[in-house]
Image (cartoon, rainbow, N blue to C red):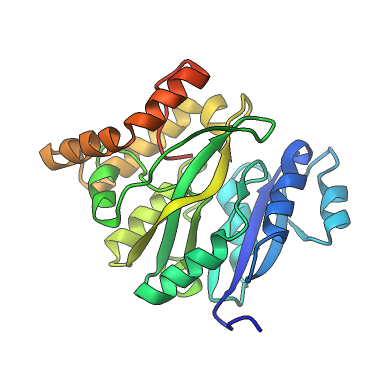
Length: 264
């Protein structure tokens, strides 16, 4: 019998996600030793998104197009489980991710637990892995600004979500970074599971690629809210990059670029 605390609600904000949605839902349905409640929030898809959700028996809701975090909030606002998360319709979580993250959070009395991200290609094939930052490094990295933890491999308590008022819909592209920064500034406790828990899919149509300037502008707002760069922040960034030297090398060999970060 599952522990009452090992339950989680996962919202999937989606708009025309049929190409990858099956694998995303399959990864959630395959979570071991965890009761995972999956809810897709659609913003007017014209492909087979709704048919895929129906085939998997996934509840769907509607949220007006134009802001992913409005869709996330619509999916989580009345959740009754202790733990919450969201997963974009092109990402996946590994089979024991939620079990291990919840167990870590419970053991450490953390409000947020996160793991390390793998990066996969458009077909779901592994490209390279990175190591997330440790909890004490996160506030300094946000000053850069750099989000040192992966959104797909992060869970948070419903109590924290409600205390923070959910995701700020003034952000369209970096609301996850804003949420995690506000959590840090509120005194929330973070815990890091030092192993891969998710696959972040790299493809040409993702928002970080198609709206890079908008992402950068919102990141700069978040960096300013974090206090701006200082010597300690730059030193922390250097140490984090050195720890991820192997990941950078593999990324270059497989993609021809050193650009990118832990932040999906």
